[in-house]
Length: 414
Figure 1 (spheres, rainbow, N blue to C red):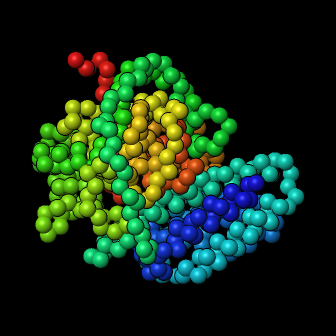
Figure 2 (figure 1 turned 30 degrees about the vertical axis):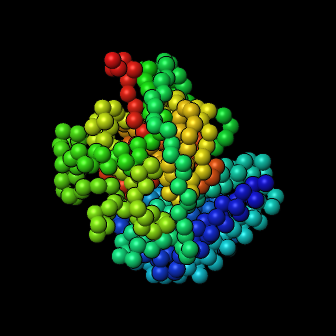
Figure 3 (figure 1 turned 180 degrees about the horizontal axis):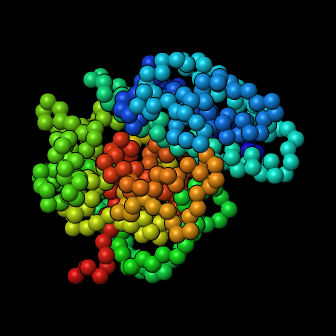
């Protein structure tokens, strides 16, 4: 039943916050990240604003000020609290946010159980599906934002008491190149299941013959790029990427550091750990991914190539950190480890139309100066990924679990 799915998703958000203190939940480590408390309140605001406000009889807000405090970017709804100042919201406290969630959940339950016209129930079902997918997006953001926050502490704390890293996997086979014939194909969401508007419409796309690496680039492989002077050699970098590296004086991926003996370590949600050479390299920007690909004599895939290759690939569920690939044939680590950068700019598909009203702001207005990532990560909730899913971030974003899968043209091989 829909109410069971609603309760399951909503409960999972609260469980993600359980290992954290109220101080953890209120802090903001950078403007691109949000406090846990804000994520929990904003996802509740979504249901209150887009469902209860228009469909509940004698609607009254839980708190009038929340309409502004927890609006993210919906200009059609009204004023917004500045994003970079979300960490200054010491009030409401977590107890009030939990009460807010409980109140809205009870009202949604009553709305679902009540008498509705057929059109009203169809609209409610559609809005609930969108709201739950939206909440799952924020569940992933909550984890990546918490990781960035905890990494600022010299204590390098783990996410929650007694957190332990998963056992190391057996050595994976060396990556291979998987060939795809190419040709005229269809990309975009197909079928009756949920999708976001940016996955539509499904449309024809020509793809030249290509090859895709069977596995993600590992820490050991990316370390070879570093040791070869990758962060010191302009030749491999896009011009904007080279300026970015130089201006920020970067020498390694986010969360990598050396210990007193010079050994590489990586901060994870399990705390500071020795760098696992077999695990996928992650928290990389598009600039870093593209530079590595050029250094390796390859390139990043287009999003159409990635989607063609992903058809029929089994879904994997992450465990809060990318794991070394398990032995097997064909493509591995397509889902559940790292989002994978593509060379495709985030743009509307041919025939895309923005939905009317404030909900039309969900995706369309961000289709500029960003790049598409495909797949899912170790922080993506189970059941949220699909082959047509289009994630997107600016080229310099590093705090998400983003990695590298290489591609190359068949015609260029000799």
